[in-house]
Image (cartoon, rainbow, N blue to C red):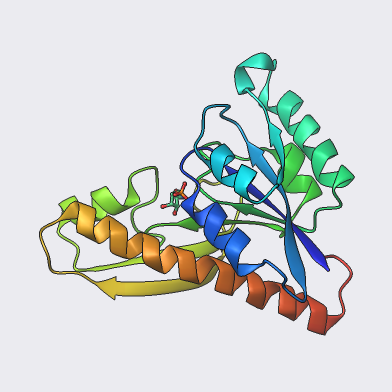
Length: 195
Ligand code: GRF
């Protein structure tokens, strides 16, 4: 059984999609939610699932290294195999990247490498793009820059950013759990004990 930690900072719709997908799953389960915002709605969602949560406020720490060391302790305590960032609004530092090399993934609402950054959907929409999409990728020191694992595209010719956002989020909620499942199955089949 592989154990997943989800990192989120805000709404948490992707977190919830992952919870739903891995309820009673054969190979993996969500074990921990890590959240850097004590007011985030994702914490309400986590209550519904009785999920263990590690909440921290970065302002309470001297540096990224200090809070990441605490996160790492939590990950080790819960024997986490895979970290899934889902709207986690912080750059992951070397403390976590070194300890979890190739085992931290992220979802981004654009077809990377286009439209990196916080406002991927809006930026693409304002640019006049007609083919949008979602990317799941490994996390590297470069923001939204790690190797791509999966992508799904959608054409949109409408005029409503809200409608487009809704469509893209629907794709995210399918693609992220599907990709996690695929990764975990690959690991199982390879018989690797790393995750
Ligand atoms: C998603 O669009 C995700 O791709 C991006 O942040 C957003 C998080 O949404 N990284 P939610 O908090 O999962 O609803």
